[in-house]
Amino acid sequence: MCIEEYQMMTRCIVDAEKDVGMKKLSQEEMSKCSEFPNGSDCISRQDAIEAMCDACSDWCDEGVCKKVSAIQKLPSAEPEPIRINLNEPIKVKLTGWGKEIYYHQYDRINRIAGREICKPKFPKEDENGYTKFQLWCFMELYGEHMGMTLPNVIEPLEIVYER
Image (cartoon, rainbow, N blue to C red; front, side):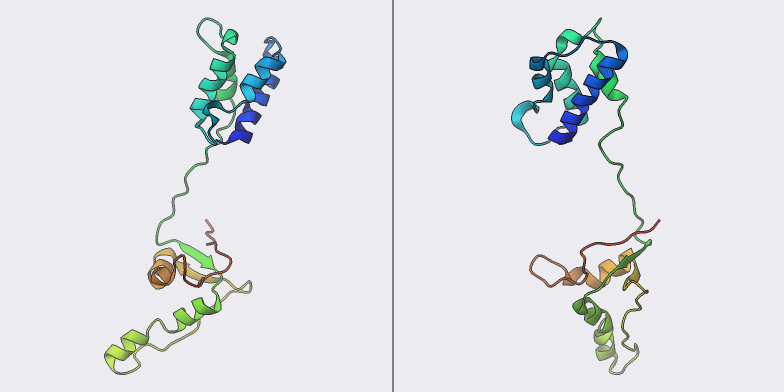
């Protein structure tokens, strides 16, 4: 979580205090709550909860912090990981260089065979200019052609995955 989310959570707690009848925060308490602990850029949700509890420890009743229970009711700011099977279809917009690689993908096989056993072809594009691949096929064909100093094989630099 980053500073903006942390500050938003503290604002949510202030709003929650009104709903559950907790005392109003003083300006000093508010500034303690909205400061980011340890001067870092990002912290975990649990660290944020603990830091806010420490900043306003006088809010705690019988060892249970009302602010923590208010935060735990908020949706998590940490996104769920996306799991993609390597056999799933993806779509990309190939650049001219990407199309050239696709066209010449069987040149080596034809050279080894001494004849044209695989005919070269350009990729099929849909009406929006996207070419469809299985994820592993895209990785196999373009992996060696991708890197920091190499020309892009897709533009924009994104893979479209439709569930």
